[in-house]
Length: 353
Image (cartoon, rainbow, N blue to C red; front, side, top):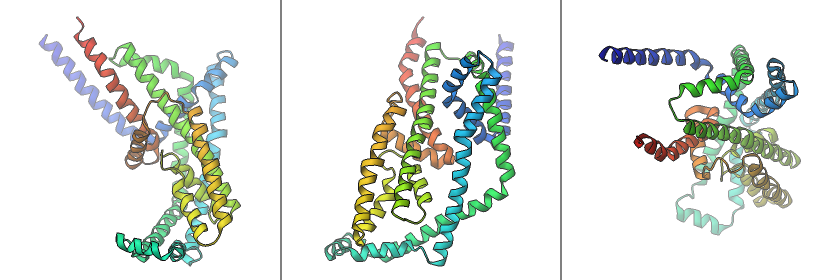
């Protein structure tokens, strides 16, 4: 018995050591592995339909699925990213040369406010608007400088990007082709009851599909509509603002209003009444309704995660994991809630003779 216990503990130490070493080896490409797995989950239903149409030819179905994903996901993302970086570099040049001055626009808004508003700001202790003006100008310069620097970084890291993209697509092919077998094998390795495994797997798949398919579709739609209305109103950097609105729409209760609302206020206080009214009506009636109409259809209510939890977990995920965090954050929150939901049944199973 003592030898058996020693052997088992030694095996656990060995298993932990090799697992940590393997994770360290994979860390440089964790984003490629992560998104390969996410795309395999999201496009799994499509792949299964193709597999049925191709009469069970797994290789052909997986190749077709990867080709479709490249056409509808990878190529548009590359084109938009390239255009966004160019737009950011252009805005950085205009800000550096003084053609685009966010602080000056803010000063126009403040000067257009009535005297009663200025008095109220003074009583609240925020009357020093010129220091805020300088901060806005500096923030705009830093943000545009960051986008401009990304143009240089893309050129310097092109080879690494190609390698990561190749790893992701290669892994995606095998996850689509061998996904069911891998899922069955992984279930045998997890020391949980079948009931708990099924519950956690369904929660995992539901949250991934809802976050990626639903939220990204809503974000892309809102960003596209926001960019179009900005272009129609002849606002500089319509593509950049549209992308920012799409990105911010991932945050519940905050959304794209952080971008279009200050612009609408600027139009109204500077005398561009019809532009301000058109922008507000379009963003409230069209962009706002996109979230209320598309999100329930694409996301559904299966996630059962409160909006405030999604907001906090998304912000935390973005802070810790970068861009990948908008999926990892809500996913961790969903699994946290699911595990605690299973805790009472786990206690009952442990107490059963």
